[in-house]
Image 1: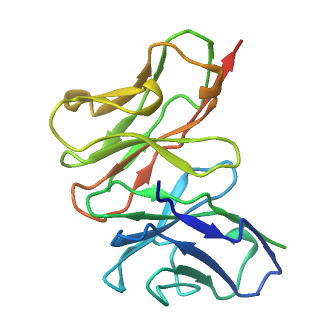
Image 2: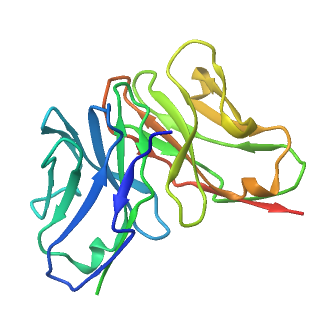
Length: 112
Length: 114
């Protein structure tokens, strides 16, 4: 069964450093998403991406964040200058079309 | 703006007992509705979804959920809980359009007593 994969599973970085989280969505899916879950809190939407551009983003997704689909398979989330409060589990998801999103296992980001 | 409330943060049931997890949503129209399960250290797995039609939907692992428009609810049920069902359960809604954001509830942590 096809699945969304994410690398790395755990990333530790120093405050102020740039990080890139990688995702490989399911191959025939058209919509791509990033969510995050701060420890003990609810899962929050960050951004959705369709047809090579951002289709929707939340207030969390400020200028420090960017997304890219650099080739036909990868979907990346970049945080330019990490802050302590960026520590969270980041989930990538993809969907064919209407609503049903399939999630990856997540990347745990720890900012020191 | 849409919102989702899961009133129960923790629920403990005995193995073999029935289960109902509550979910209430706020949205102007009928949204798409979902239940996801998250086991410790794992990602989110879709249990079931409601888009339209029959208001009682069946999912994986013996779960079902019923959409009640009058109560703005989408409660998850299982007639007999197994120890492996211990996990965190999230209700989520999305606008009835393709490719839109999911809004999640705060989650309900289910513990199963032997």
